[in-house]
Image (cartoon, rainbow, N blue to C red):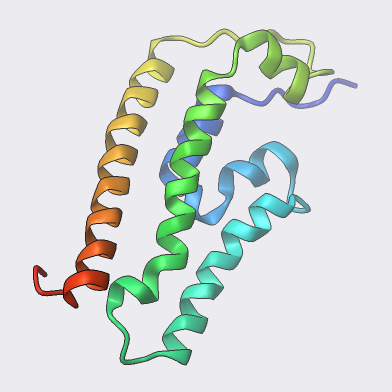
Length: 138
């Protein structure tokens, strides 16, 4: 019996859209994956920060999830840029099918790079604004 074939484009899309929740890790490695659990724990981390510091700026309350989403963007790039032969050796050793990345993956990678870089720069800018000016610019 062959194992299900894991699609690289779909895994990259999951990491791009739902990377902060760990959906891509659960798709690839199952629900016992520690990395996926850490992503999911970031959602609980938001609740903990909200309960511990209700007067804090919204940025700090959402920071665990923001970091998890940024890591999800990075993981989307790593997954999407993995060569097809290495992808199949790692995630599809017994599926009996060969992966063949096409142009939608390239478009997704460019979009991930654009959105991820913009998000990272915005996150750093907001952090510096809050730390050095007390939020004077927003």
